Length: 495
Image (cartoon, rainbow, N blue to C red; front, side, top):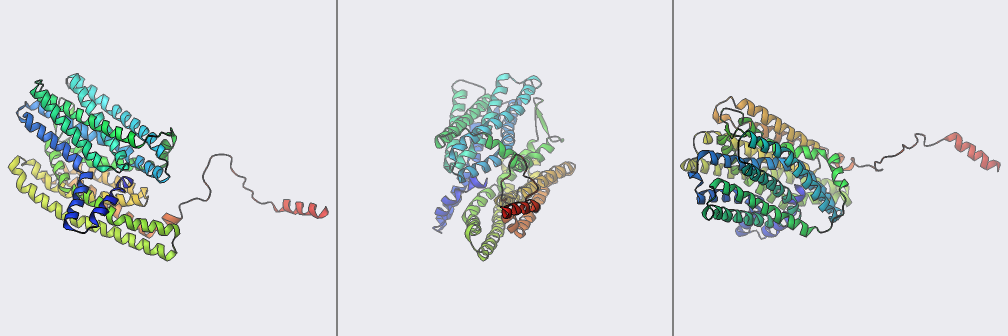
């Protein structure tokens, strides 16, 4: 993640260095384009497609089946790619540092094979259950499975597009894919008279396959050489396995509270296969959108301000005096604390404003009742959640995987336990699990950062080795024999 964001700072610095209101707005817009615009394009496309084709007039059962299929495609494709993204990002950052660009394609193939294999391992049994127990048509089931794999390819390949530092291409690819999807759905319904829900599903799947093809083509165009070295990628899984667990737990924590409420009285079961909680899921979506700007703010401030201080400290460690290292370290941690506080202040203002708009406006558009009762607590929880993630990102900077792992474990366990407890409370407290888990995870990450600050010298200077580890026969324990040397000395004198 850190390596992927590194290139954004160069562009942002060029925009913000003008110090004008217009440049600030342009910089914020650029940050939004490279971070959250693809997600809004997908959501906007589904909304426009539904309005254009009259989805609301379709029978209830096909509509709910379509909604659940799209929900499962997105949620479980993100969970499928989560175990590999952070570790492979670290591997690629090391490869780029060593200028071994020919090793990127082997990394891409290894991660792609693992992601698709895991996707098939989990997706195929569900599809069989969907067809056999749910009595859903084979063609519809196969289309949904193709959409799931397409989402896996898209979300996995984005990591490598970020390495190319051509972030605008991601948004362009999504725009092209969603535009083609919208056009295809109109043709299928208006020209060939296909059912609306089937046409929408096929079109969305085709759009994501088009996005995946564009991303893979761009990766192949940027990285043309293939070294064929696949084993070093696999060795990274043994070396940096905490990264796999951290990213998996964090992504699971984003949805585990939803899974808890999928097993309560507010759940809805579709075709005896899909389970969801529409009111809670919609409230979660609104809460995430309320705080999604935190991602933009984090990337912008991280790359504009903190990265320079981090780079200055790294350069001081390599060739500076002791006093230079201490001064650079103090400046770096002061900037870190400043960024955390600035993120909290700015995001608090934005979240409160968006929250008030949602509370006032959304009931006029049909969002009321249980959704709006659950929403406030979830909005507070997601606010803390994004702050927690920013602290974990800083732990990544210092290669403190133990601290990041502790924060992720605390986050997912507390979120699950408190969500189970909250299921028995009144509706307004349903989202307390996210708030409690995020708060505990943020506390663990924050105090771990303070620990890193106190022990940074040990962390930087005392973790290396003078002799590389290797396999083979052990060296003899005896390194000096005084009697043997005296005998040799006597022989020399006698001669």
